[in-house]
Structures are given as structure tokens and as C-alpha cells.
Length: 138
Ligand code: THU
Image (cartoon, rainbow, N blue to C red):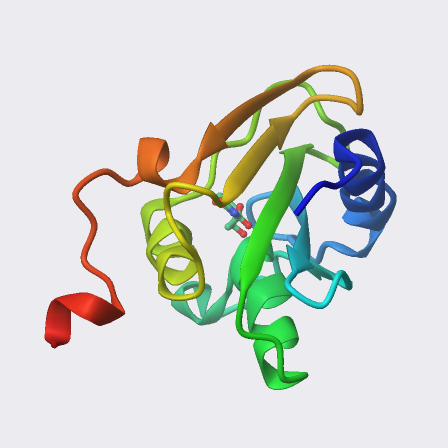
């Protein structure tokens, strides 16, 4: 599916304000483009009991799944300290595995962005080679 990279990144940037990260003070936002063409947003939500927190990417993807979506086309990710974006924010290993569940790793696009014009583009396969997915259980 063709899509506007700059627009997806801008949606993630605009959503960073909703990040709840009073402990790490590292604010992450993700915009997930799904098979229907709809975009779902997510932020990291931390907790006083630290392990109970969740990443922005998983929040975006889980929201999409609960709305009936099953195919992840692309995700744009931004993050940085105190609601800034100073560097590229790569997805953590757990989030890469969650992406793997709902995509074709050769096609799914991950945008790790500093701005709508400045981003790294990778497939999920590049970020998570030799992955374990739904077909591995068959
Ligand atoms: N975080 C994300 O939301 N996504 C990532 O891919 C990297 C890490 C969050 C988790 C935690 O709330 C904060 O960033 C610091 O690790």
C-alpha cells in the first residue's frame, strides 16, 4: 500500500503530547497505518510500578487490533526527553515482536523519525531478522 510518509510521521509528532512518562521523562509516540487505511495512535504510558508501563508502539497496535484490524502496513515512531525529539527512537525488541505478529516482515515499513523530512526507513525484516512468527507454529 502506498502512503504518505511525512503525514504519518507528523501524526506521531502531534500525538507525542499525550505521552505519560513521569518516571523516565522519555516521551514516545507511534502512528500505525493498518490494512483498512486507518491510522491508530499510541503513546508510552508508564506506571509507579515500573514494569506495568507499556510502549507507544504496542499501544497503537493493540488499539488497532481491538478495532478489528489485522494487517500492519507501516508504523512511524518518534520519541525523546521531555516531549522533545532530539534523536531517532528505535522500537524495542518486544515491540518488534508484536509488529511481527501482524505483518509481512518483508513489506512492513518502520519509520524511525526526527521530523517529517528526516527519518530512517526499514522493513521489519531488517529490524528483526530470522523472526519467529505465526507460521513458525504450524
Ligand atoms: N519506549 C517506547 O515507548 N517505545 C520504544 O520503542 C522504546 C521505549 C518507552 C518505554 C518507557 O516508557 C520509556 O520509553 C523509556 O524506556
